Image 1 (cartoon, protein in one colour):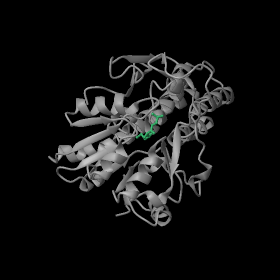
Image 2 (image 1 turned 135 degrees about the vertical axis):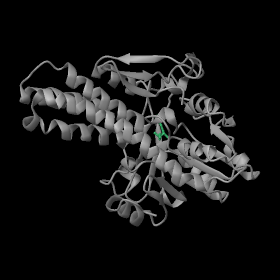
Image 3 (image 1 turned 30 degrees about the vertical axis):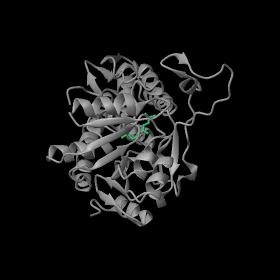
Image 4 (image 1 turned 90 degrees about the vertical axis):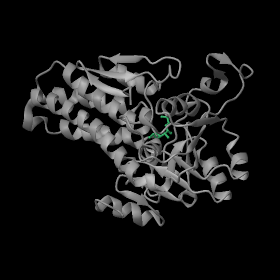
Length: 350
Ligand code: MRU
């Protein structure tokens, strides 16, 4: 990739500002935890694994800035930062997973002291970043076997390098297949209201020279009916223990359509996206975002003033509609409950 989604640079967090893509490639230099939290909330950085990495780096940054040398007050101040990070976006579990990893470092402040804990926090955040890329590449290795030469693949939202530390889950599978010499065509749903497909997936696949056609969200059913889609691959924000998947709003409709047309529907996600506390997708918190995302496009109002608007950012696809879940431990198949349990305890599923 000739761009970096997020990096630790000069004791700050450098974030590729995705709100400006594809028109401008601009970086945000966050010098404190609050500006990282704001970047997550306003979607300068987005995508489940990427916001986990950003939160971890933001917490590490706070560790460097908090002046006290007293262990208890350091821990107290840092806990406030962790809570603040957790309030940015509620659905993607990777955010809480990453914050909890940072909390585990903080819990050891009495053993290591404040100075060493500051260093350990930075080390942990960098490790989360590095591991995410490695994990994505493994997902790509397992998933690439599903991609046939000449396939027409549909994806929704953006689950690529921009949504992770730098390779991608759903798009990572495509990068791995492409690197192996397979040739295929990608259809990217535009993904209203924030247009992650039209702006981000189209941009990053073009950077990689992978052919892509953008569709508006209501077109995929028609293409499926005419036999023009062979496979659907999407990412995930939270996966319950039974395999129900929360992902970008519109994923459920897509899965229903794919099922109706007997088209395989795959989810690609790291194990860190599985919420082992949740029995089913029913209790997954669904973020509702500002109605302006729906009423306006690029700053211009498209609806009558004062109109009622509903803007859930995610939906939940029941496991019955999913063909397989591609993880770094292998491709999980039905019954997902069993496969997910095995994947928690074992290193490799298949
Ligand atoms: O609101 P977003 O852009 O953060 O939503 C992103 C998605 O829904 C992605 O599909 C998901 O986070 C997986 S990213 C590898």
